[in-house]
Image 1 (cartoon, helix red, strand yellow):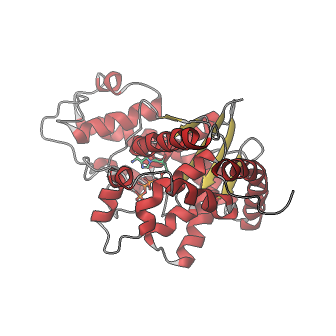
Image 2: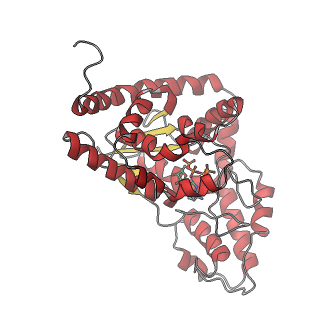
Image 3: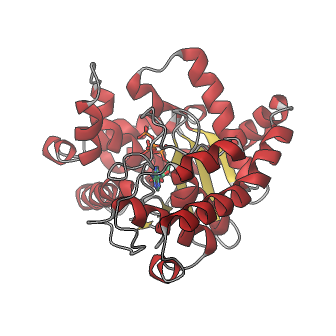
Length: 328
Ligand code: AQP
C-alpha cells in the first residue's frame, strides 16, 4: 500500500484554507493508503511562540484532526517532537540541502519580511520538513499549493542523498487538490488565508456560523457584478467561486454559470461552508472534553511512528558513514 505523510503546524486556530487545501484530502487518503499524520510542533518553534500557547495549540490541532475525521485506528497520528528521529535526520538534511536552495524559498522570504527576529530555524525549516517526510518512506504528500516549492525541494534533497550515499529514501510526490489548493483571505484576496496573519478575512473552522456568514457577506469583491472565474483580474470573486466549488465538488467555472450577482454567491458560499463546518464543530466540542484520551491516542501514534522512523534513520546513518550508536 502506498504511504502518505503530511503535517500541520500548531500555530493557531485552523482555518478554511487548511481544511480545503489539506485536511479533507488527509481524511480521504486514509481509506486506501497507509497514512501518517503529524502535528509539527518543532516547526512552530521557528517563530518562538509562548510555551503555554504552543502546548494548548498542539492539543487543539490534534483534537481538530480527529474532529475532521482522522481515524487513529486507520492512520498514525502523533506529535512531531515525540519522535526524536525527526530532529536527528533534520541535521543530515541540512547537510544535504544547499544554502542557495533555502534562500530561494518564497515562504521564507514572506515570513522573514514580516518578522522582527528571523531565526535560523525559519531558514532551515524545509530541511526539517524533508526529514519529516523522508523518515516514513513516503510516496505521496497531500498539501496546499503554498507547500509545492518545499515538496519539490524535499524531492531534490532525497535524490541528492541517494546519489551521494546510495539508495536510502523513497522520493515523494506532492498531491495538490484541483479546487481549494489556495484559499485566499476574504478581505485581502491576493494573500492566502493564514493562521498567523490576524485578519477579518480568515474563516476559522471553529468559528460561529453567524460570524462566518457575516465575513462572507463582507468579502472583498469588485464593482463589476460579473461572476467570472479569473483569479488574476478578479481575485475576490474567484476566491468565492473556488471555495464554493471545493466544498460542493464542482469546478469554479461551473459554479460561476449559476450566478449573475455577487450577493447570492456570497450567501450560498457561506451556507455551504457552514454546512461543512457544523459537524466538525460539534465533534470538536465532544472530543475536547477528554484531553487525557487525546494524549493517550497521540502517545500510541508516536510509538507506532517511531518503529518506522528508527529503521529509516538507521539506514541513513549507516549509508552516510556514521558508526552504529551501540554495538549490535
Ligand atoms: N490558504 C490556504 N489554502 C489552501 N491550503 C492551505 N494550507 C495552509 N494555508 C492554506 C495548507 O494547510 C496545510 C497545513 O498548513 P501549515 O500549518 O503546516 O502551513 P502554513 O502554511 O504554515 O499554514 P498557515 O495557516 O498559512 O500558517 P502560517 O500563518 O504559519 O503561514 C498545508 O498543507 C498547507 O499547504
